[in-house]
Amino acid sequence: MNKARKTKLIFIGILVAANFILWSVFFSIDSGNDLKVTFFDVGQGDSLLIETPNRGKIIIDGGPDKSVLAKLGRHSSFYDRAVDILIITHPDSDHLAGAVEVAKNYDIGLILVNGKKCATKICAEFDKIVEEKKIKVIAAQTGQKFDFGNNIKMDIFMPNIALAASGKDEDNNFSIISRLVYGADSFLFMGDAEDKEEIDLINAWPDLTAEVLKVGHHGSKNSSNQLFLEKIKPKFSVISVGAKNRYGHPTSEVLEKLEALGAKILRTDLSGDIRIKSDGAGVVLAN
Image (tube, rainbow, N blue to C red; front, side, top):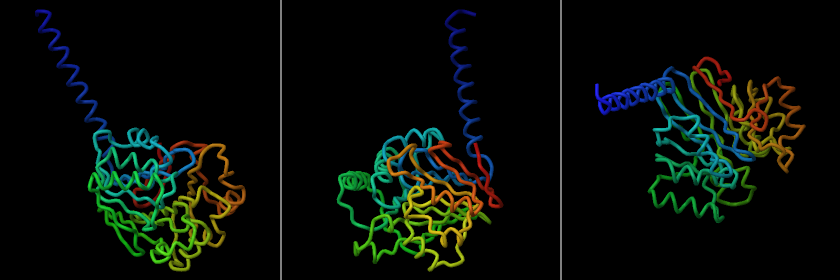
């Protein structure tokens, strides 16, 4: 066998091996019936990824900077640039800045916003990208429902659009609150909601519960109302928070309330990225 032919065969062998590895990764990522929710460690901010069994992808918030892109590359299929829905719970920079990068780099089917006007530089940049890429944007409405197939659905509970338009309250209390349901399991995503919006939520839906709670406003003293927590009864409580942040989040008061409930407390500043999976009949921590 001449040297050129041998080199060619070695090259072909490398390509075959690389292709095998690629498809092995493909099937390992997409196999099974698990719903996966990954809470990204993006410092002092919020960002999470929802992956459905049929390869649906929902992102809630983008964190404070472009670090979300590395997180998405690590936790989702690198070849898949499609996002079904990007939800911006409210336009504070620690939720929106990274979402700007997501909008630049991914193909987004729909963006859901809280409907409150925003005149910041980051909002202007986000609006420009959305317009350039012709991405559909709608305001969240109480009672909206999204069906992702495989018995996976999302309900939008808040914000109150009339109040949001009036501009009479703090932005945090106009966070989009959503609940993802898969069979018997549910995840409640609170954005930066504080106690006012928490009480509005349980007054409107007094029977609302969730196995997994994304704690509102990074565990600040103004969130996690006692009555609200007692109603929700979470098994897992996830706090998205930056290490040694200047706000003192999460506060000892919030941690004590969660501990008293018996909820397992998970923090991105201590554990890094947190992934929880569900088969529709129980939620567990995943690697």
